[in-house]
Image: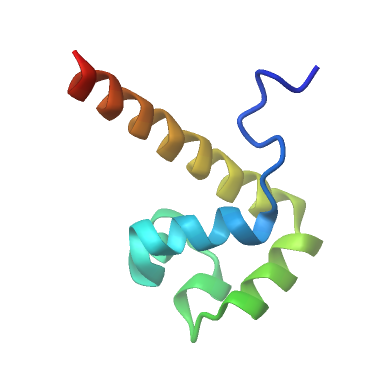
Length: 80
């Protein structure tokens, strides 16, 4: 069952775009110290690296899930 999986239906590209839009490459590289984020970052090189490097992809996915959790908390505070 995928109902409780926050990554269900989210492509790696969409996930990475949202992280870069929110944090920017510099801050993303500070949070996850991988070379594709810290040295001449680009979407294409980062996606290529993340697709073939499971440990790095796991870290990026975990950061995205944390970001979603923060967004939900903020939305709940604004609704209350």
